[in-house]
Length: 436
Ligand SMILES: NC(=O)c1ccc[n+]([C@@H]2O[C@H](COP(=O)([O-])OP(=O)(O)OC[C@H]3O[C@@H](n4cnc5c(N)ncnc54)[C@H](O)[C@@H]3O)[C@@H](O)[C@H]2O)c1
Image 1 (cartoon, rainbow, N blue to C red):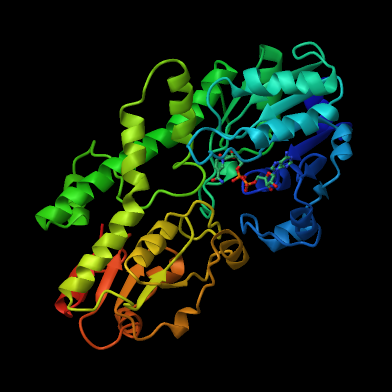
Image 2: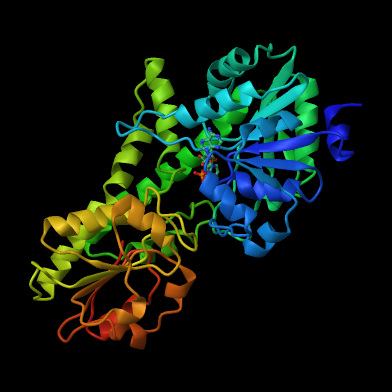
């Protein structure tokens, strides 16, 4: 009997190593079909899961309460599993080089607890070669087992979009790969248990690794192009959104929009690819240019706020500015790598300490990472400027009366980064309205 059948017959178990935004929903999905061990180094997180709390809001508390996942911070539990999925973070260092320490750490832990006949699948976003050249030697060293003989490996990148309730694990085609045909078949069949949209069998592990990293690089470059257009059109006094709407009537015009690119995927993954390219003697032209543009957008928004305050005859120093939204993306509590912090820091350079409201954000994380304490949106009054920074659903419902109430007398400065509001309505009402 092969491993797939043993999993389905509950004779073997699957483990998840790393239970964050990616790993936890996978664990919960698999636990509806087979036996799952969910391991994370973070004992506090495990404690929350064990108590039915979903800090990521990806599946919700109810699903966590009802799941059969065996949550544990004890690595020896991994010995009970034969099919392992690794979903640990892949951040970059301050100099933008890949920080592979979580992937290496997870490989070390897994290696120590790996048994013969196992299959290990990595899901973390990496540059081509990390699974085979970095992870396998660690797994072999720690386990004393031989890859290809005693255990097999595969790679299956994750494409979920946190906060997105439509594009979910079950509904997105999953790329799978394996070190040989037999492994590929096993990995494909296992993922087919939970991915309704089906799997795509990639040619090789490196192809699958490369596919993921270019998906996010492509998005980064396209958004960078929109951001550059926005800078140009702002100088020309043309509304970028109106231009994009007009151009978007052509069948092959790609629909991207300007904005802040934060988080740990789109703003990070391209650096994995350029790092590897650099090691091979190729210096990226397009990818790194895009990164530079996107990385500077927070500063650009803050400077635009200052210019608009001056235009509105408001005193800049100690101006009262409110920022609505702090997470790196809409409808998601995650504040890690948010670019809104760049707006905050740049405003401080001008002597402005903004107040920030974000009813969706993980406030404990924001306090821990940035020392920021949110205010209640209802307490925002008497502002000189308001920056609508994130398109959370709650903000899309704000009407003009509510927005009027945020301001003091005098000309209102409103920066609508995501273009959520009707420009004409606010301009007609005398607002100094600005958007990317
Ligand atoms: N979040 C996304 O939108 C998304 C989408 C697609 C792909 N990815 C990729 O998936 C990977 C995971 O991302 P994430 O958002 O779930 O990260 P995350 O930070 O939310 O979760 C990672 C988890 O791994 C745990 N961890 C770290 N080192 C560990 C170790 N040695 N052993 C066990 N657990 C360990 C952490 O405690 C954390 O709970 C990354 O490579 C990311 O690029 C993320």
